[in-house]
Amino acid sequence: MATQQTSRMGLTDRLFFEHPRSLGMTWAGHGIGALDIGVRLVAAGLACLVHAVVPGLFTQTAGKTITGMYEHMMRRKAGAANPESWPEYEI
Image 1 (cartoon, rainbow, N blue to C red):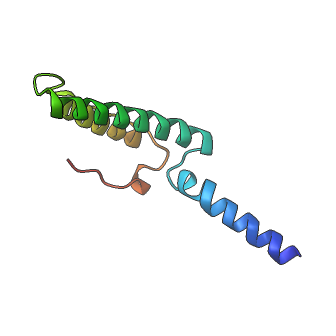
Image 2 (image 1 turned 180 degrees about the vertical axis):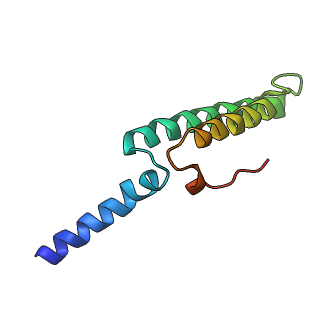
């Protein structure tokens, strides 16, 4: 019984806390950042779908979104407790 509970705790830790901890973040802090990035990506994706049909609309939205997200992530990485643990991002 104790082994099974320990195993579940290990799985829970791996799935929910290991990655944020490796970046020096809390689960909630990581979640808020991931939601922010996800919303930006969805909005840019929708703009691209509209742009595919009406090329005169959203002509710079995707590029500006990607550049802005890159700059945002670089600022977060620089301000992190352990920036050396963060992955390298390239555009």
